[in-house]
Length: 290
Length: 271
Image (cartoon, rainbow over all chains, first blue to last red; front, side):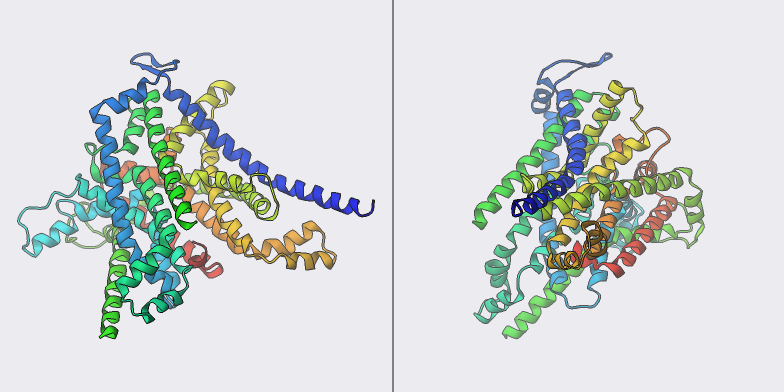
């Protein structure tokens, strides 16, 4: 009996301590799963102009999205912008992440803060910076015209290029931080081993660094892709009202058109794309690392 | 020759890294510059410099109210997020709970959800709650704080579980051998040693909440906007040094709080 009693006490305490996870789990379940379920239910309702939302169980909102060229174009444009931005972030982010991961500089913390700070400043503020630079009398046009390189100001604001530049700058820190943490986990001596076996830097990168950093590359790519698909402030401020992407489209359906069922359906299409991509990438990484 | 090539590669690498860092910081540089312009129109080169726009930003009611609201929501959501997230992290790392890894992933889920989707879902949820219970949650402070807590929890769980994973449990056993009870052990031994993780979680949770735009867009009521939304709405109308000055104040506040936090917890370790 004396051998059983202490174990029971310990087991009881462990079970009790395990319950500490319950409040947070319930909170997320209530505030995330509950709302998503209602949103999905809304997306099956009907929208009747004048009558607002009518209870129904139809998939016409989804059919409307995938059969109307306008909405499909918005989706395609959003995916195109997201893919370009993600690739640009990967190409631009890798060198910076590598330098941050390997630097011995005593200013390393300041460099990391310089990467993290813009992340916390908000997308609207950063878009304001680009608006200052890209306007017809902005910094870029003023300097190009001052140098005599162009006669007419370049039209950059309210173009896809402005949106691309804006989103790349917004998402680059996420890519850099994800890659940096993975590269820091790769021992430096595997790189030195490659060099001492005669590999030049490009070969070392392709044969050693890239494969070892692959999980981080995928994680960073997924994260920046999700963020680009989901961008709101940047396309609104730098793309203008004519440059529609999925984020502003969803907001417009809720706030301006009052078409909640259709807005809910577009939200779900956006989220499904996100989940499918995340799971696919996760699956690929797990199979590769096995 | 190989040494020269290696040096050339190193130079190219540093140049590419500097370019990317410059690209990240460039918009902040332009906002900072614009905040000091003398003229109202953002045309280059500036006609002169002035500090008048900081007074204009401080006198702008929507910026000031937005700042106060964002601060309130950020602090409340961070505290509730810590209260829910730290115990959950302890349970996840220390105890074999059924479906542990699944629960962990579940708690991180709000972080990978598109903000727009979180916003629409929370919006319709609050509508349904209001219809069912006739409690006015739509556009209320409580509704906003609850939604922000949802995006704070993943940061807390992620950073606190990471700092608990490297924690040596024999220190706790030593404390208990010396007669400390579970509560004393937690307050005097466990909590101090995971403090860096908690501080980082508080910082990241707070700034995530403070800067949140996509989700809050759906949840703010009339006359109640957060600072990022006030800035967005102003920019949709026009860009001038007043909004730049308001942004610069925000940049400086966040920058200072990060450098101060960095003195206690090395940010390069936790990010």
